[in-house]
Every structure is written in structure tokens, then in C-alpha cells.
Image (tube, rainbow, N blue to C red; front, top):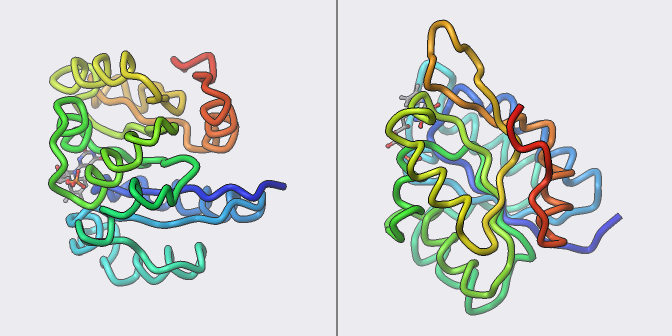
Length: 190
Ligand SMILES: Cc1cc2nc3c(=O)[nH]c(=O)nc-3n(C[C@H](O)[C@H](O)[C@H](O)COP(=O)(O)O)c2cc1C
């Protein structure tokens, strides 16, 4: 068991929500206190994978906490040292690009910026169709940043989506435990 508090930020990779939400439950079962965070798009958009409201309610029920969904609510994460670690999963190509160049214009990207100033770990679970194309440079840049770690990832459909990578979200807890020790879990590439 642990007494640690973890931020869990979801971006608009809606097809992976069903894989990520069980990890919230696993983290809680392992004793982590979870602060959910959602990007504007993840929080608001209804898609063919479900309504925004359904996902929001599910996430708040599983975590037992109110979702941070605005920039003012994300800002205190750094100054008040609210999180021992921050997980961004799923992390979209859009958010990867912003993180790589220091843009902080969503609750998730500001949470990352605010949290990283404390020298504490940020763990990213990628899910994007252009990971081996346009987003590759951003993943590479982030892998070179201090205190940034990745959940192991692999190609999810090399025939139909040859540039797509998705994290193995079932490795969230071991990857988090390693990140809390300042270590990138290996193997990174599945
Ligand atoms: C149904 C649906 C599924 C999507 N899946 C993904 C995805 O898996 N990965 C990704 O990078 N973007 C995906 N997108 C696009 C993002 O939602 C879009 O780039 C959005 O601006 C991301 O904003 P955010 O990074 O602030 O959450 C999807 C969009 C829709 C409508």
C-alpha cells in the first residue's frame, strides 16, 4: 500500500478510455489517492465511443474525486505540491506536441507544467496514429526531458495504421513505481 497522491490526466483519445479507466481502479486498489484531470476536449466531447457525461461520471465515481477541468483549477498543482506524480494517459499527439514545446493551454498541459516545476515525475501513456510519423519528434524530445517517463508502448495495428503507437496501459502501476524512483521502466518498446 502507498500514501501517495497521483494526478491522472486524460486527453482526447476516446477509443482508449475503456482501457484506461480500469487502471484508475487498480491504482485505487493499490492505495493511491487519485486526482483526475481532463483536457477540455476529453471533458466535453461526445463521440462515437460514448458521451462526455458518461465518462466524466464514471471517472469521478472510480476515483472518488472531482475532475480538474479548467486552467485555474490545474494551476495550484505546482505551488501547493499537490501530486507525487502525474500520469497523462491517454496522451494524444496534440498534447505530446504541446508538452514538447512548453505550451500550457489546457488543464492537462498546465498540470504538467505546474507539476514539473517541483522536480517530480511525469508519466506519459501515448495513444496516437502519427506516433511514428509527425509525433515521433515530440516523443523523442520528451524522452530526453528530465523527470519525464513513458508507459511502454508498441504498434497496435501495423497493417492498417503503420505509424500508430499505443501504450500498454496495464503497465501503468509498474511504470509509475519506477518513475517514482526516477527510473524509466524497461523494456520501453514492446
Ligand atoms: C473519436 C475520436 C477519437 C480520437 N482518437 C485520438 C487518438 O487516439 N489519438 C490522438 O492523438 N487523437 C485522437 N483524436 C483527436 C483528438 O481528440 C484531438 O486532436 C484533440 O484536439 C485532442 O485534444 P487534447 O490533446 O487537448 O485532449 C480523436 C478524436 C476523436 C473525435
